[in-house]
Structures are given as structure tokens and as C-alpha cells.
Image (cartoon, rainbow, N blue to C red):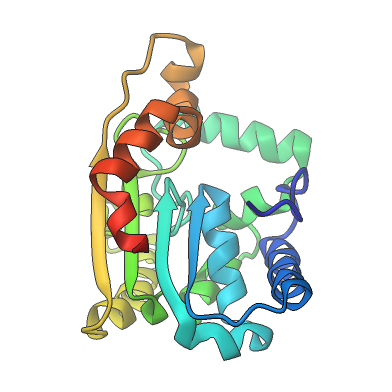
Length: 232
């Protein structure tokens, strides 16, 4: 488990990716490992941090060793086109008080030109297509990250034909096409459901988002019934 960025998740995603890469390279060097396969499991923002580390020159030598990328609730298409007004209000408040760079990047507010935002540029970088398995896990009870974002798929709002919809469509094409063109890449989406008790956190969707990693029962069931085969 990566510990380098613990407590720093409000930082620039590119900065977090640098930290992850340093940790990986130091681990390989200190253990004098001969790398056969590298797999990643990312939750939420962590999935973006992994992707941002993949295209760096320091990691290029390991691209041929990539095996499985497993994403739990990853905001791959950012927080664009979120349908819940309650979330949008919470996002605005978080940006106002916490000044989180990573949140602004996921919300596409880090640049006035959406094509100059971090996530748009990330969609143009090499990465996921190098894996043998790309596994995306989503849940309808997750109202923090939009469903279409975790699944890297089209959303209704993007079909309106406005600038945001056009940018979203371009990002989707940039991200998906290299994966789908690689016949050796196994691309799978999983939908899961959580037994979420009624509470304020479940109402705003936080419980459904955090359940990906907080529910040991879910993790045990998922890996036993589906996940482990991608790491064999």
C-alpha cells in the first residue's frame, strides 16, 4: 500500500503522481527486484494518481510489465456533468474553504479553457492501454463520483452538444480508444451494490463511495468472486 501521499490528497495530482513514482522506484531499488509484472489498485483520487504516474519518462521502462489496473470509484472523467445539486454545493464549499488543488482539477476549474485542464491533458497521455486488464468498479450508491466517470462512458449531459459536452466527448475518446484498439487488453466494467444504512453520509453519497474500501465484506466477496483472477 502506498504511503507516500498519505495526508496530501489536496495537492496537485501531478505532484501526488511524482510521490507515488518515487515510492515505486525506491521500493524496486531497495529490494533489488527483477520486475515481471506490475499491477495497481486505485480508489477514488488514487486511480487518477496512478494514471498520472504512468506516462512519466521514469516509468517508461516498466510499461511492458503492466498487468492489471483495478479502479474502485475512480473519477476518470472528473466530476463533470454531476447530476446532484447537493454535491455541487458541497464541492463549491470544499473548494472555498479547503483550497484543494486536486478537487479543482477533478472539477475542471483549474483552467478557464477546459482543454487546458489537468484531466483533459491526462486523457491525451499514454497509460491504461498498456495493461493486460483494465477493471473499473462502480456503484450507483456512490454520489461523490459520477457513475459515468467511474465507468469511463458517455453521459446524457454530454449529448447536449455544448462546449462541456464536446470536451467530455473528446476526453472519452482520448481515454477509451487506445484501450479498445489494443486487442490484448481486457477491458471490464463491474457494477456493485452496497447495503447502505440511512444517514446523512449515505444521503449525500459519501457512504456509498467509501464502501469500496471500508467494507471488508464487499472486498472479500469481490476478490473471491471476480477480482483475484485478474492478478493470477
